[in-house]
Length: 154
Ligand SMILES: CC(C)(COP(=O)(O)OP(=O)(O)OC[C@H]1O[C@@H](n2cnc3c(N)ncnc32)[C@H](O)[C@@H]1OP(=O)(O)O)[C@@H](O)C(=O)NCCC(=O)NCCS
Image (cartoon, rainbow, N blue to C red; front, top):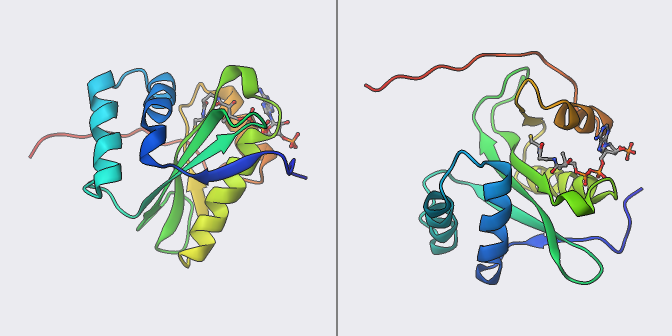
């Protein structure tokens, strides 16, 4: 059962710095400028990938300690419906982990997906991220297998 003291709410422009900092911790391969640019685009309504929602978790002191970014994808591995709610990013600050923050963020992301008419929720992680795999399974996700991804310019 989620702790009712844990609050999840949509991100506002005042959260930009905290969100950028946590994004950088989750995706260190991105540059600070790149994260700032995407965050600014999100609040300006010019983010290229939509719909996209950003949910922030607060602890009982009001400090922002985690985020979930959620989208709707036309297809997701292992899913049978189109318009699949998708957990694009999921992060809780190290000092706030294992206290149910991740769970409430995922529950809020699922509610967002339901409210947008989605019937499946999907996610992914790096093959070596065993904590992420374990937490996904603890929250009711099913492992639908590993894929390797490729790209090239056209
Ligand atoms: C993944 C992450 C967001 C989970 O956040 P969290 O706040 O610690 O998660 P919760 O405390 O809500 O735990 C959710 C469930 O996972 C379980 N869990 C948490 N950490 C775990 C771990 N290290 N190993 C195994 N299970 C774990 C919890 O027991 C809980 O299940 P339960 O409610 O049945 O007990 C957090 O560990 C994190 O930010 N990791 C680094 C970034 C990352 O890997 N993100 C995911 C990328 S896809």
